[in-house]
Length: 178
Image (tube, rainbow, N blue to C red):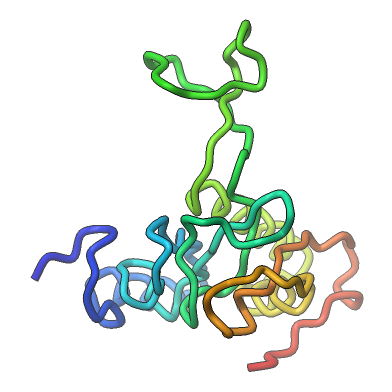
């Protein structure tokens, strides 16, 4: 079967899911964009992998974006709408820029904009905790609970990323609350 990104089917045991599980088994966390279809992330690869850290997108009002995938396979939400990023030297299409004269930073949207924020925060937690699983637990335990107004009642769809805010290991809750 076709296992390309964004392919809709039972996505729990794809080649992607197995590779992500193998990485996690050796202590490597994989942050994955949930997808931009406004659908259940559990039906899409690779976001359905339960060993991935699957990220949905919120807007400036901490509400799920119209495009973000959602559901039980989403672990955490992060800003994914109107995110400033470095612009490449490629030809400019219909991009929006922070400064139209300079065109150094484009304004983008998507769960692929939210995911690097989570990956970077996981690295900050790992710098303090020195363990991937502890870092993930601390990230989830430190997340702010919001009312994202997701179509899903899954509590993780209301967890908004927060960075560690401390260099002290003792200040971070690494308990597994699942």
